[in-house]
Image 1 (spheres, rainbow, N blue to C red):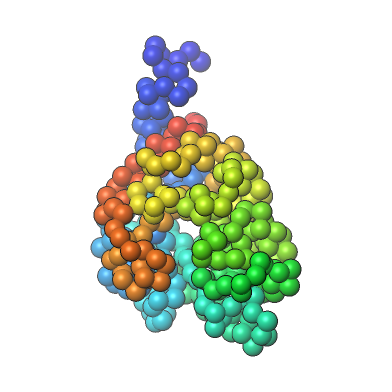
Image 2 (cartoon, rainbow, N blue to C red):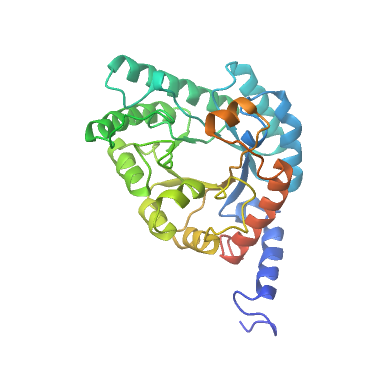
Length: 320
């Protein structure tokens, strides 16, 4: 079909028209390949009714779903309550969690590994209370806990066996587990896509897949395209996260390469913004967030527009 004068693929007019087309298609969710989410850790790690007005506003911005941290709140009722509120708004739900040295899946201690499995099962239960379809995060090993040596084959074996058992449990709730590779300063078991792919394959369960986080990849990967190619057969979730954890877009990250490769591999899952602030000091201190990057609502507003633009530009939509 001949394009209007001044419009060619990649031109400002073409991108503008693609964004308008994408906005119109958002009225019919069944036409969308990807969904846009926002992780409410930008405000709080605690699931409670305090998140209700945040979900309300995220819905008005246009988000398809929210992501919650599982673990800071212990009361199952809080998860059920917020999950219902989000569902009533028409928002989808995903969840993220971590494990501690006391519940470390790669521990030499069988007793500690047993506690790890029980803790992950508890997190799966809370994710189910939320109505989440995915539980992601670096729960293959204890966060920010190091052995002072490279990851050993035995540790991959322990983590894989535990993830397999957790996958069996998650399947009963129709939840996908999506372990995550973290940068070297927060983890030693899985820093790269190649290591994560190895672990997921070793786990050998269809409910154990992989998450890709653009922030951690900025530290560890030589090539975003190569990393995504490595994970393409097991990729279940994507965190859109800036190099500084602020508003996505406008940095040195190769965003065009990232979104083009997601389109190329046929990714059809969540694009969830994970950005941090010091709104929850306990959580901020635990992950080394010592300053404000952007106001969370600026991140939500501008980040949504950025993802819409990139999704339209790189054809992560169904062209009716």
